[in-house]
Amino acid sequence: MQLSNYKWFQAAASPSASAQLPQLLVRRLGLQEYEPIWKSMRYLVENADGTRADEIWLLSHKPVYTQGQAGKEEHVLNPGNIPVLRCDRGGQVTYHGPGQLVAYLLLNVRRRKIGVRQLVDLIERALLAALREFGIEAGTQANAPGVYVNDAKMAALGLRIKNGWSYHGLSLNVDMDLSPFANINPCGFENLEVSQIADLVTDRVSLMRRASEVVVNKLLAELGYQEFYSLKSWERANNGSR
Image (cartoon, rainbow, N blue to C red):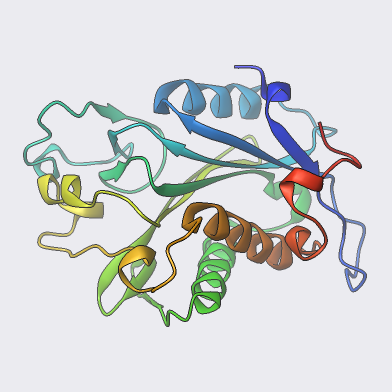
């Protein structure tokens, strides 16, 4: 895939940033098949050098179940015609589909001097802050990465660190068909309920776009950059974007 064919912007460092931050690009990739995106992430990480910019990719996937590298087959109950792909992220099986926001974080964690636990905490803080923007109070659970609302999982995390880079990231249920989750043990937990933003808000207009903007803003803030959408919208983003 040609990343340059999609909208992107370069994040600006927050004025309060205590040190010079790496260049960070945010790309909006739309609805994509899972495997080409996964292979593109892996290729970039395997071939990255110390000068490559960090990136965040925003997208949704066509229906697919993905198994983490140590995922157990017993957690895939009845996939039906939805493909099951084993990939190299951490974690067990999950479902991706239209109406779910996926954010992949391709970060040089060695350059940023952050470990995987710090990165997980950063992502969870960003998600909790994003959901508060929608009036949703969420929480985390020990030994079960992700974000939960009343014990129902709303966001899942799965990461891989290779050559000092992170890839994969988070998936947030926004406004989707949740029924495919019933055919798996989500994230390896039997009878785990799942939830989504659309079921907990009254205003569902442009919900995916709004969720994308809020989540990106919170990720940028956690990483030390200015919140982009407080400055301009995608449609008006001309300076530094393509």
